[in-house]
Image 1 (cartoon, rainbow, N blue to C red):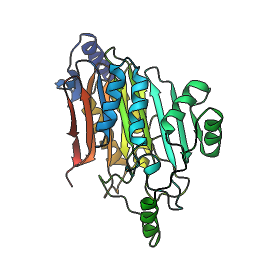
Image 2: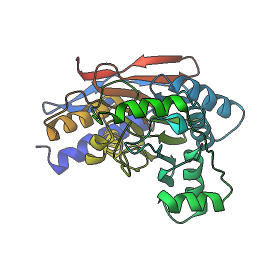
Image 3: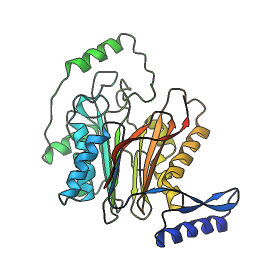
Image 4: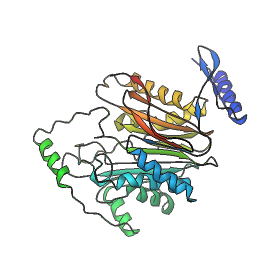
Length: 331
């Protein structure tokens, strides 16, 4: 096991490399320090989960280009997905819980670690904006349920009473058997998570979701939980998660990714090591997917999934594309 002195040695080596402007960070492997190649953006970089991340990234990039802050970018970027009523895993177009209610969770965090979150809210189009208001207008981090809804109304947010007949018809068919089973890489239980860095090195992140389709009424996943679905620390990096939220909650997944980058891991290594911990802690992972995205404080970025099929949207000054992440399992 790595002792404290060797841990400090690894950490100092990584810190020294960052200070020197290197794009490669030493890592520990079989008692030696090796150099692991990383991908690093020259300027701003935006990562977000799944196909719906492409239009979200486009909006976030436009916000930065027009002089908006990185916090503005990650808020307004995922708002695009919240307003897409054809999306079945985010926003008011999402699939309901087992009682027929669409409940929403969201959070946001800035470079300095300030954070806001809402959970189990209904009939608001942009929970991520309520989360930001919680961060900026209250001494708290998280508001939930009826209390969050009342506070939102008192602070200028309006309800949207949209009902989508096609979604409710799907729910009625499901309710005939009420058999829930997660399906990997199908966006019936996947958030949009976004992490981003501007050209000055400022970081921010956001998450928003309607949660697992047909979940127990009252269930909250990882997306609004700082440290599970999202974690941002300007000194080390930012990470977000997608997939089966319970897996991220039990391992404080996004926080773990950021702390591993603080120790000198590359973003891919940090995401992969976190997934290895999840594998060790959970004996039954059939049909489950979880993925992490990460940006390190020097602009290096990456992502990794539990199994094949996790994709993420990437936007930099010279790239705008969907990337297939590395993975632990092929099936």
